[in-house]
Length: 364
Image 1 (cartoon, rainbow, N blue to C red):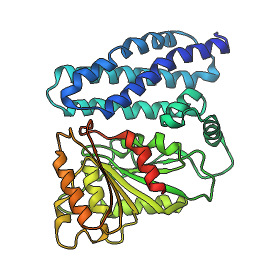
Image 2 (image 1 turned 45 degrees about the horizontal axis):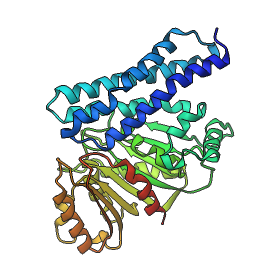
Image 3 (image 1 turned 180 degrees about the vertical axis):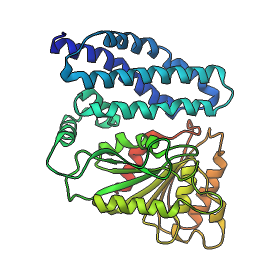
């Protein structure tokens, strides 16, 4: 049976290349642009061997029973990571359908979900689940560990799910910062996935930044394959109920309730956020369009003085940047307090590096 020192050495030998691979995947997600797929795959190519060798060693070595959970979790994450790398390489090399690239990257959310329970036990994992600006904050890492391990009867913290298995629609996933102190009100980010997406996956687009800043993240799943952009709105009422359900369990700072979203989620964020009586104090749509229904007379009345942070990429191949420029002009004319971010190297991909700026804007 290996000694504790040998166990930690085996963990480190896998963790270093594994976390490096995941960081490269964050970069690939951000710069995903179908014409650049083969170049992006080259960035990931060396990681297959880098992860496979220490993973094989870990699979073959006996471990003490008291760390069996950690071993099994690391093995699962390592195997899923290799599957993700292979799927992306195949899509980049062989497929002419750009959506195959997005399907391959959906595996990334499952890898993160599998890895996250080890954050309380392994400092490198905990630091990876923080945005880079906060990774060297030893005090924060200590508070997160203590919060995850406490057993004081406080409300549940961490990653939670409500009727939101990946084969289900209409539920939600929630992140509650481990550092939360009962009674302390927190800002709430409501993050809407794109078409054919799922809230359980999209949660991970916000967790690192929220975890460093004591922010709640609610990631709903649309009732259909995408949000209610045509026909009857089957998502609006359930979205409001989700917000109130979270607020009934955790104190929400009602002056800082952000509705954001990607692609179809951004388009629906405009619709839901600009309705009379909506609880959302700020909007941050990314890579979507201003729905035609909002161009009708009086439809933008709520936009006056509403803080809106609008993000779009100049390389967007699904919604050309001219659609965002139109939205910018219409919202400005309606009196919105608009921040417009047109990003030169962004395609139709979620701009994760905007999250810290969006949260700074929300807090002011």
